[in-house]
Image (cartoon, rainbow, N blue to C red; front, top):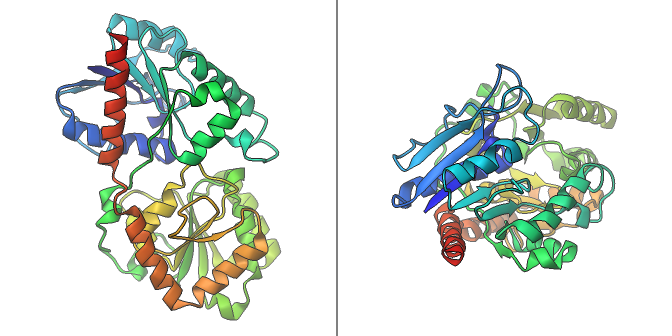
Length: 383
């Protein structure tokens, strides 16, 4: 079986979210599927600093075996519609059996079966603004097209599949849930450095900290987290600081201003993007992880934190049974949950145990095996 992967999401020096998920799946496939050929395809980076294309010499975090091949498609200087202009004809020339796209977009002219992964359905989450509207018209269109043209749609959680079913019953008929896994480096983690050493490496004060990990997209509700943190009485806060890991650029400046207006600027830190080598320790030394999102398709940081033995406060729908849950957008409830957890060592210990039990079976190998079986079924039905 010849399977092509759209790896254009790897066009970043700082992989997060979808890019990290794809790397984890590819690493597992490299270890157990030697009888298949995997083609990692993306448009060539046309110029240094152009912001388009992928340098496929990038380190994916594992050594590529012989049954993996990198393919760069020459996009020229007009990268628009590269999937239609370049990827679709290439798939035909190479006689690829199946294409897997990690995002909504895929070549409509592809002659081989296409499987797409769907992470979330923002416009079905009751939000307003850019996260619910704006560019979401494109996602709506892609879901309609996937319902018609894709062989299968992979939802990363039951929640996402439910939202797909609400938006398109036709798409739901093609939808299969394949949950993410958690990397072994989190599941088997033993801290290699103290909290003081970690924070010194990040040039941050050596104080206990609450942790948020992710980009400052509107749905992440980082502003709501700042509001809740500011509501904590000084005694309850107990000298802790709040680390917003992954928040950079203009969103960071806006949140710095908000923290200043709330009077907590000195205890809100912005360490920026965290390299993979430091991330397990960052989770492990946190007093707790906070995931205040309006919604999550899956919520990977919460499960990674659980694997490291860190208690989690999250909005409903993420880590049920293993996290302290609050209603999305309820600042008062979030502040109360933070105060309760910071002041209750027994509850923290309970959540640590529940969290580790919750993620014990969340393996990327399981996800990769499920996907491989799905691809095989699609290809055999086509023959």
